[in-house]
Image 1 (cartoon, rainbow, N blue to C red):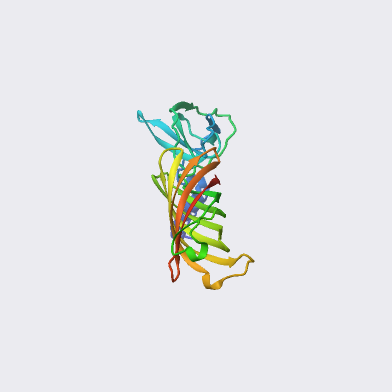
Image 2: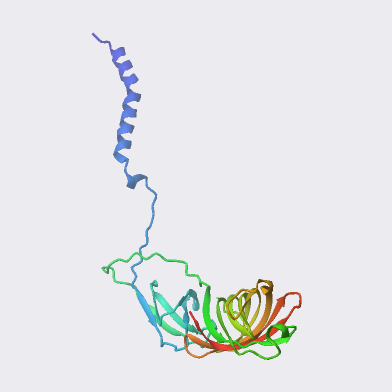
Length: 296
């Protein structure tokens, strides 16, 4: 037989255990991601693709597209990018915008600027198909503009070269040039150029290869001046092609040329270089040249 005191003791002893079990079961019932997760709001924009177009410019090598968005009672820059097409596709959030297109010619100089064109992007309907667009940071990508040309290049002895070619000018000469100009849209555009040439000097043939540093100065949207300075090596041989190693010499050169756009991809260029050879006699030549090239 259990006494009343024993019952009270047993009940009092079990009470904390019962409370613990009750709280534990209550906790389990309340445990769910919704109960314990932080409140996070996800915003999904439903966007369409917008295509902006403009009239093709015959002389344009590429176009700069500037889009501004109207916010706080004024337009501010929203998007800038380059394209070689006469259109661009973007995905813009709803709002009021305007865009402007700047064509660039083969000298990487702006030809003209279009007027601002305003447009509005409306919010997509709620039942529209969702396109999850990842917005990217569109930076203006600077690039190199490559060119290649072929030229007619006579050679005129200037000093200490009479024993090679006499005193007469030689019209037998050709040259090619390949290089790149950094398209930074500045007044002065640096670049580099590799040139190779063949010349006939009386009874001696000369093959020269030079590496030149370029500085291109824009005159207007169609013309520019190229200044160059470089160094190279010239290999001399007789008419039978036998090498004359004692006359294989290094040279430095300075030059200037005028370049003009003929069509969208082709240009005309004319200039002159001074070739100073590093030898015992330090002989030198004047090399005027003229020809055409392509830019890509």
